[in-house]
Image (cartoon, rainbow, N blue to C red; front, side, top):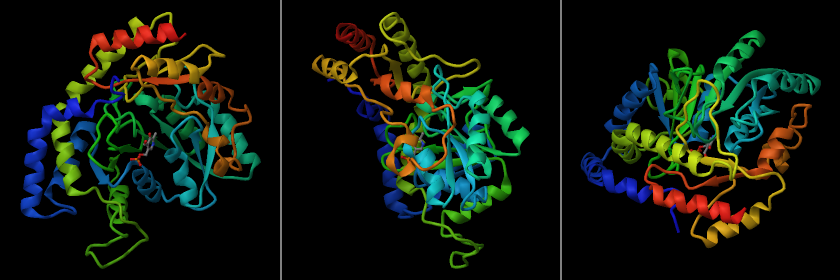
Length: 373
Ligand SMILES: Cc1ncc(COP(=O)(O)O)c(C=O)c1O
């Protein structure tokens, strides 16, 4: 079976540095908030071009910390796409707030700026005050933040980038990290920049918000550990994971180039067989996933089974829109019925994507797809 994501090939490139990093941590023993944590935050902030990087325990906790920094209160609404991973929407109800589901663009799969007014209307009709927008860089491509931000500005809303999948990409020449007031990412192992456990980070230029998040990730601590000046949580990145990320950062830029080459070859090989992913104007992608659209009416389960028989794994991200998941059905959704979202959930299929795919494997995948269809 072709690996869907090949972490072993990646590890072979950097294993010596990872082992040396683990050795250093074992020697100094500072497993929590050791020196590697501050060092990787500085390295990540430099890569993203932001003043602050606040590392934390997961992409989900990154979103919660960012919402705490924004002062989100119970009952307030936040617009979010329905075609996303659960965490993007889940963090609002965790804080007693309300996700307001908006439509996505059929080409980029990301929040459609033209659909934002309908989401505002749906919230207003439900008596909910919207305070912000969370865009998601789905499958590696950032949302159209220039357009989203101009709508947000006209409505007095803040904008947050859920870049769990899109760290390393850019829009209009601006890197992820600087596209919104506050950006969250995940270091889940399968992400373009992943560690060997759970991890995440928040990026911002705002000193005050950075201070709140640094405090909230350690139980709302003040200047000293047992001075608790706000309600917080345990949400630190552990030192071992910081050591893994330091090794992975050495090859991250190179891997982004390799991912783009894999995407380019897929686009050629799959041309005329399935609808291949396209980038919106001005966007680059970190290609967290390579998600194609099958022709309408295709028996997707049968295609997946035929691919599997030919040694090709595939996955569906995401089969059910968030606004149709049982715990989320009562939250407001745009009046348009989210038809694009529904169509994507029925037709998308993700193919193997990682920097170490070789052309012969991609050829095998394309032939299997052609035969299946
Ligand atoms: C779009 C999106 N947001 C948030 C998350 C949450 O990240 P984590 O799994 O690190 O909590 C993920 C992870 O899969 C994601 O894909």
